Image 1 (cartoon, rainbow, N blue to C red):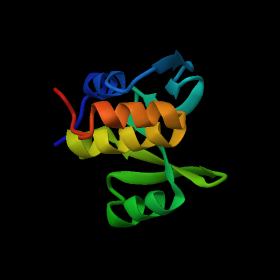
Image 2: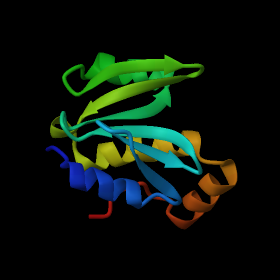
Image 3: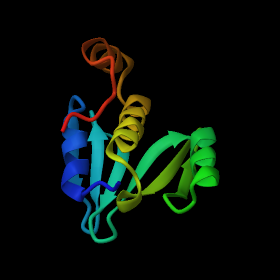
Image 4: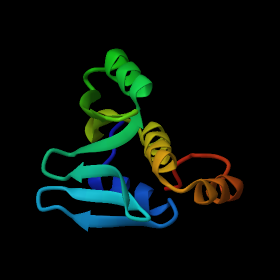
Length: 121
């Protein structure tokens, strides 16, 4: 159980057209210029875009792993503690955040090429 910062960054690289930006204390994660996540190496946490319903369900189910970051419009961002989550579940959440952000044609192409969202180590 637990995912290192390097493993998390490897996950992000498996998704098409992702970009990393240096925000000073964090690393921003984007697809075609739109944000879907953040990494705080110092605290070994990530913030990921999700639906508000998923955000609330994750936090209610396992508050030791997830916490509410903020909501914006129809999205709820969730903080994930890397040391307390397994790689496959985190990869699923990262992929979902990417899918909520990427243009539809890019998502469709990715899903056609890689129908399973399992982390490739």
